[in-house]
Amino acid sequence: MKITYYGHSCFGIQHKGFHFVIDPYISGNAICPICVDDIQDVTHVLVTHGHGDHFGDAIELARLHDALIICNYEIAHYVRPLYKNVRAMHVGGRSEFDFGRLKMTNATHGSDILDPVSHELICGGSACGFIIELSDYKVYHAGDTGVMMDMQLLKRENIDIAMVPIGGNFTMDIEDAILAVEFISPKIAIPMHYKTFDVIDVEPDDFKSGVKNCQVDIYELGETKEYY
Ligand code: NI
Ligand code: MN
Image 1 (cartoon, helix red, strand yellow):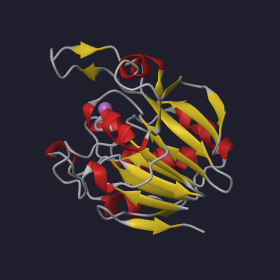
Image 2 (cartoon, rainbow, N blue to C red; image 1 turned 30 degrees about the vertical axis):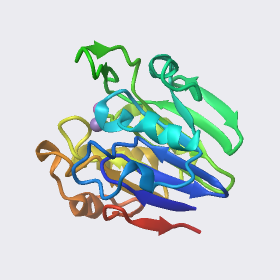
Image 3 (cartoon, protein in one colour; image 1 turned 45 degrees about the horizontal axis):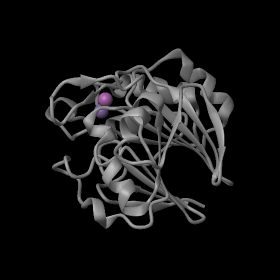
């Protein structure tokens, strides 16, 4: 399995012919090292919530590859008139797919969509995270969230790799993210949602030195790591 970090909360996960892109905030992210059409052969686009730094380029990226967008019901309702290949799920739901199973987890955060024309907020349901169950790996992307007791339930999932926000202000900060990783107990934790904006300019090394219960992999922008 290969994981690529595109900055903020955007990751590509490639495994056995499937290519997931989660929270594709690319064209709007000044520090994202690539363009939307640089990403090849995308099969699934996962959106954790409606905020622009996550929903981002989801529709454009999916259109380029006829990829399946997976998101909550309310965002799917917004997407469908613009792009048909969208699958609605909701928090707590788990479903079988061609790649394995996917569960939509709780996240404590908002999810409204900023309408690009009216600049009004449109209901985007509730924020979520994802547990992607592939044949050999279980990957958890927490989305935007604070630390919560629900994360203790994730210990039972035997997560291999957990992507967790660390930037503070909009999500948990490093102190809380260290606690979240204690709750989740993954084999590997990957920090995300930091440095993109001034208010989340924190050092991932401080997270790494605080985490005692698992390996922490810090990604450079655009870096790909392979897991065996
Ligand atoms: Ni957000
Ligand atoms: Mn965010």
